[in-house]
Image (cartoon, rainbow, N blue to C red; front, side, top):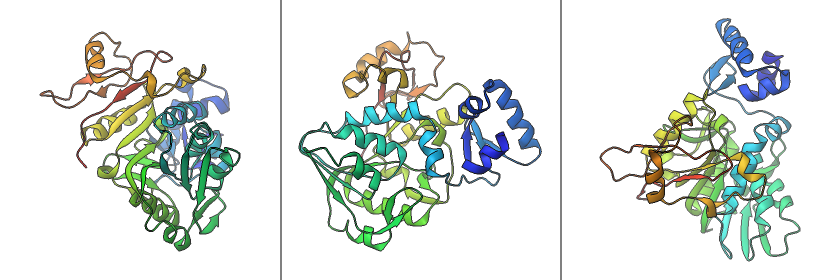
Length: 315
């Protein structure tokens, strides 16, 4: 069952494997190690991927069902970053689709997108103007790609781009497994003053074929708190922060009451004061720059608040 899931999806987290096969993550981890010893899978960032180093893109139904609680929290947080009357671009993906569902409540918003799913989510939002690119429909993710999509973005300038992808590392930045999708995402980035990447922990440390956004162009990453076994994800978060990316961590449990959002972020001074008191069981995240060493700050228990780590960045 585990091997079939990895072959079907390209990459599967231990948490998802344990849920599907109805066993513990400890048991799943042991089975994954056995498959790795046979050369059938590779272990990556708390999960399993096809051998060969690069993760291939899974089908849309599989992506839509993966890490749903994390994606919901990330989308809720990201929606809180958008201001009334702002003009933004939103790329294709299951996480950005979740974001679009929450943007309907922002009055005076203009959303430029190449995603049919993003446009559909905003179709009945009478206070939001939706502008779609041209292009050729890519059925696997319901996105418009190709020269038509790219040409329609020439001359566009917006405040922010919200993008997702298949993998994110500090070395290569955001990447995807499809060349046409990567090219359109790069055009979306060129249209924006800032780039916000939405990526749950299963994508942190994953390598895919085509780079879309290099690390030095990423302004902010909105992600979830990686589980303890995902050491690679925690390492990537630290490395991204060291390169000046602002890290915002959304807690899935906080979304249940509709409370997630930037209003719950703590400022740098408060976070520094709490750093010595917080439990260190969570993945350590870098504190703001300015000290002799970046230091470490742990996020508060899930459901209480979100951690927002904002090192100063020059662009």
